[in-house]
Image (cartoon, rainbow, N blue to C red; front, side, top):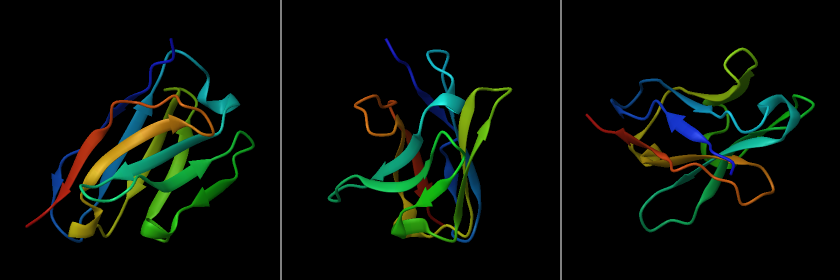
Length: 113
């Protein structure tokens, strides 16, 4: 059973920063394409960022230029650095093994003053 565990979600003020982390003991994140998605009420789930096994990255339109995805080999984690957040970034953020049905439970990010 693959388990992905997200953490780092919080209440943050507009213009602030937040770092999300996805950890797993099931796989090596260095060997798979990993992705972060988000889902807000009334909206379909959308891709935030993906990091491929070769380290190349792809960013979805919603946060392009304001987000950075990276991997930490020591922690076996995939991290998402979010900067200059806006209330429109409020959503549940999910970690996933890209191109599969393996997802975490999500972590809530709320952007509000």
